[in-house]
Amino acid sequence: MKKHNFYAGPSILSDFTIKNTAEAIENFAGMGLSILEISHRSKEFVAVMDEARALIKELLDLPAGYEVVFLGGGASMQFCMVPYNLLSKKAAYLDTGTWASKAIKEAKLFGEVDVVASSKDKNYTYIPKGYTVPEDVDYFHITTNNTIYGTEIREDLDVKARLVADMSSDIFSRPIDASKYDLIYAGAQKNLAPAGVTLVIVRTDALGHVDRPIPTMLNYKTHIDKESMFNTPPVLPIYSALQTLKWYKAQGGIAAMEKKDKENAAILYDEIDRNKLFRGTVVPEDRSIMNVCFVMNDEYKELEAEFNTFATSKGIVGIKGHRSVGGFRASLYNAMPKSSVEVLIDAMKEFEKLH
Image 1 (cartoon, helix red, strand yellow):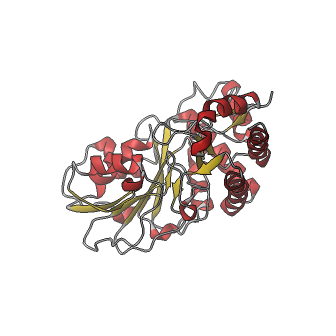
Image 2: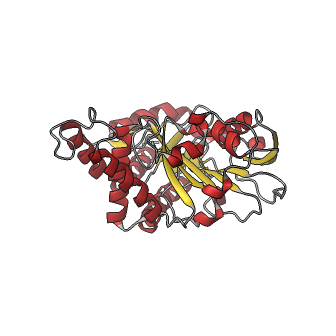
Image 3: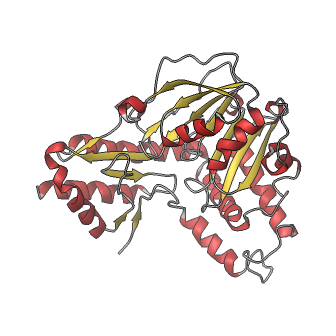
């Protein structure tokens, strides 16, 4: 039975990425060696690193003055690295979910943190509006997509402070005006590669303004200067990332990804809104197109486990919602084919008829 992968992360990757990665595990770049065992300083892998960084600049249309680095590990390390490198006295943060609140906690170790707004009062089911970002802060930090709660900021904010964005779960899902951001970071395991590598995009003139000494490994300048090769990088995930980036370009770039993602999200939200059994958990204007969260209507709450089992019987995997929300979560990352979304919709319709 074909499986339909709705996991929130690590998550679905394109067949192109998986096939090419599998081949490289057997024989990388005609070397007669697996990519699992080659030197990261071999000319063949250096070429991979260079091409991946160049493709990111191309696909996101990065202006001059921005650098791309790959760092080992997950995006949570950036909760520390961002304030270490950028927070001199005070930073502003928007609290829109679990990961935003974790970032806030770490930033408080380095200076004053102004939480300009929060949606915690309604279990993060909306994006705060009408807040003011102080002009005297070192930076303003946002989390553009909230994987757990299913809200998303799908616009480039206009603020007078430096803008930092955690785009872990929606990077490459829409064209951005990169010039509005001073730092973007994203764990790769949602829209780019297997877990183990984090992408950071830095405006270089945003660095060098804090007085504190920064440990070498935690200093963005270290990794910029050494072109992501200061220490051994996560070779396999970076190779997979390159395959994904090539696939994006072949599919028509980031605008084409956004078009497909919007279509997938629209048909699923339409079914959630139509179906008597289900309801969305997020206010409509802030619904994520990456992570669609929904629950059973109160009068059908007892059917939740039964629907999960029913969906599993159709080859649908990974839709169990996070414990903070409950219900269901269908993650519709760039590699998600419309046919899989339609299988989920058909399952919802069929289950409705049974009840």
